[in-house]
Structure formats: C-alpha cells, structure tokens
Length: 127
Image (cartoon, rainbow, N blue to C red):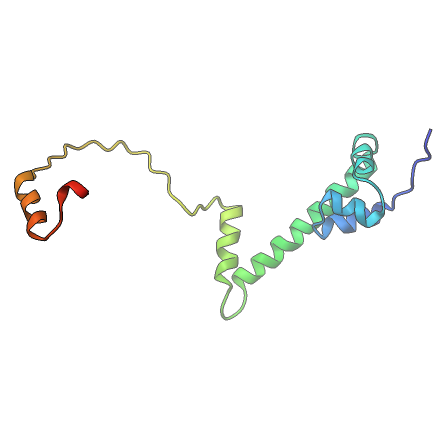
C-alpha cells in the first residue's frame, strides 16, 4: 500500500481562496489531480479546507466588488452591473412570452413592380 502524502491543509485553503482550480491546486502542491479526487472522497478535513478556501475567496471578491460598485465619487458601473447580474438575478435579455397574433395583408401590384424594375434596367428574371 502506498504511503499517504502529507498535504498542508492551510495551503489548500489558501490556494482555493485565491480562486485556483482543483487542477491548479494539485499542480501547486506537487500532487496529481487523482490525489485531489481521492482526498475529496476519503478526507473530510481536506474537503472542509477546500470549501473554506473557496468561500473565503468568493467573500473577498464579493466585498471588493460591492465596495467598487458603491464607494467613492464615481462608483464602478461595470461592477454594479456584474454584482446585480450575479446576486440579484439581472439579465441582459428579456424573455418575451406573449402570444402575438395579427392579420397581415400585402397589397402589391406585381405587374407594376415588374415594370418598375424593367424601367430601371433590371431584368426581373435574374433576381
């Protein structure tokens, strides 16, 4: 049976707080991705360190984003929009679900239209 490698859980938490992916965390720790997956299955303390780190990172960015959107003489409008899209459910597009029914009447005199094209030097058969 292979010896279980010691992993610094404080380092795992710090890397997760910085927003690194699990692959990047594995690379930083000098372990394989499969080791990360195995530890997630078998080690509750490892899972807790990952979760705490991810939570810390999201909290820090959320606070910084909120500050950028609300503080100062000229708040960051992009930060406001980003925050509201992600936290308040804002969307860029609207869903239109109304049923639209209408009668459309097209009143075209084809002979006149064809003659107008011919008078302009356009051969209607080539269109």
